[in-house]
Image (tube, rainbow over all chains, first blue to last red):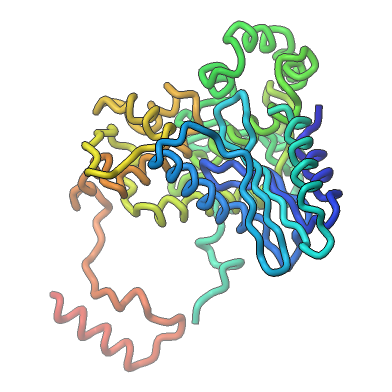
Length: 123
Length: 265
């Protein structure tokens, strides 16, 4: 059983991690952030990526896909951005957001570790 | 010409909250639309009659049975450790409680810190029975409250939508709703306000306000007309450019101002 801060700290130990945030996508609020620094405002990233998730959810509804998003990968020139939606027992929509340095990160490993962190959060 | 956002008076949600945080105060900050609980200057809890409390979010939201919650309050309420009891007795995970509690805290703070909500008082030494969960800085609460106000206005700048009964409109051809929107609209009976729907669903009130504004922007619920002018505080009608005058008006500007005033009389 982990609290949110421990979960986020663990996310930033993932190889190549730049920063991580736990985001409530109904409101766009970052419930917690770790890392980031002056090059990346994670609060802004949290709010902006909420729109990404909402757009995808809406698209799936329009397509009539009865499925759920597990994660979303955005590949930039120098970074990976991973969005992992938490399948909670509660009905709050949350996602973990992880920014990775593309040079240093192992994408498959990072996805796997993020999934483990989700399980430890027990939400 | 333009003040920086960090120091402009508009950016301060509550000067009293800032002062109490600076002096590391412990107690309850009481406002018209809610209460913020501080411990050593950090915000540990918030409540508002508009926002469903953590009990409603957990029980109506379907996470905890009502009697499980009641048991925790009975057992640990008097020693102000309800949060810890819920986790220690295995009713809820530590991470989940934190997330739910933070959701309730920011939600209530948004309404408690609503502009112009009357006098503010502070009762030193008062603590809330939920007990410590995860304190947040007063600055974070202010920042988030401000972000939420701006977000609502970006989505659909008609505040009348927030307090009026929600009246659905038929979707246009090709328009679709998300599952969460459908759940919300099923409770929109032309009587319930967004806050009443939030209570019925066990969801935070701000989330429901935001969703209703989105639905109104998409034409899926009615946007009530703005209150008639006589319901608002009386304000003289001035040309729009008056709002743009600088901090050090020059003589020419004052002349233009006088001329405009004379012309409007």
